[in-house]
Image (cartoon, rainbow, N blue to C red; front, side, top):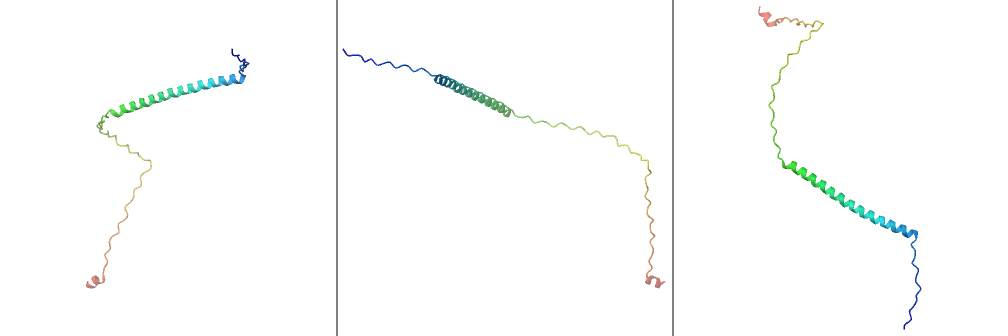
Length: 115
């Protein structure tokens, strides 16, 4: 019979505190990345929904034909009473007509010679 080799068993290395912390940080980082991706996808869906809603609203407004607004007949303007004339306390100055100069006849030499 063959002889069995007896290899000494290696001791399993114990996890150090740093290894435990690194494992937990890696687990948390993976969860954060997955959560971030999920939030981004949800936000993209909501943005697309808002865009399509706005497009539907604006498309409905353009599709409705506008009715022409008829101009209303204008009413005749009501004439108001004439403004009252104010009386002044000072008498108005009256301009006197300038005296008219009497036209004088010029006697020419020829006319006076004939007489």
